[in-house]
Length: 306
Image 1 (tube, rainbow, N blue to C red):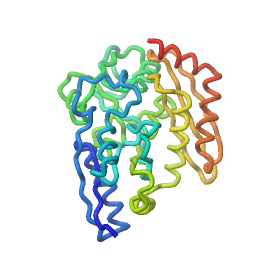
Image 2 (cartoon, rainbow, N blue to C red):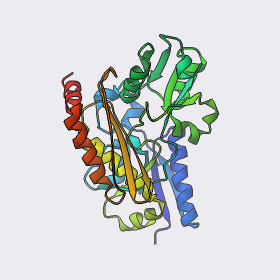
Image 3 (cartoon, rainbow, N blue to C red):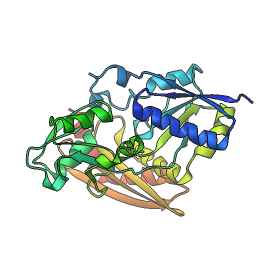
Image 4 (cartoon, rainbow, N blue to C red):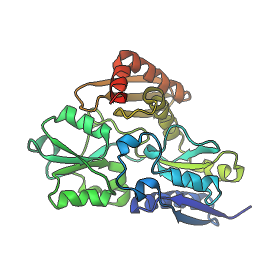
């Protein structure tokens, strides 16, 4: 058996840490395995002028990694699952997901959310976060920002912004959880689909790699994110409507909570569904259909027409 595996990763500090997490888990299962992490520049990293909202579900942070997989330059690609489109290129598959870390959003700011002064500048590059923030604190000034986590935090330290909202899991993996002002409650700030989990993508039919990766898959997380991704695929259809979903698994029961909003956050539809953990796709699709009938379809149509 080939005793080496090539892991493809974006080159950011966080991405490398995430690839190293997968590498360590592989080493625990296969102590003699030789692992090399290959840094790959994605379009999202190369072109900082890309408007992520307008780019849609095109995978600007994963496409170059997927191309490297397809041409056999790497054996697996490690992504933040929330960056991975629900439809993968032909010949590739989601081979495993790691155990989910804290899925919540985190506020790094000069004060807790309730204590921020009106018109305080809060940075985020996410329509989902901005819509939910506007719904809770319409008096704040939301600034669209891009860049890695460190550059976002620097804008708070320098006084350019009063705060930023980022994924709690990113800060925890970077060892910066002491910088978190507050973990935002999922009741008001549902996270992105897949947030907190890492995706291991591989070539479909590559049995050597698939068999090696299977031990890394965390079944409750896999079931939860499968429901979330089924929900996203069913409701969104590629539009850039603010959408969020979080599923949890308790034994044989899966519960998924979801949100669809307009960009301004003035209209938000939320709902939940309880189903069987063994049928996660069905749970996500059922919730999506229910919410579409309840008015989410209108919010999606309005956003698509802009």
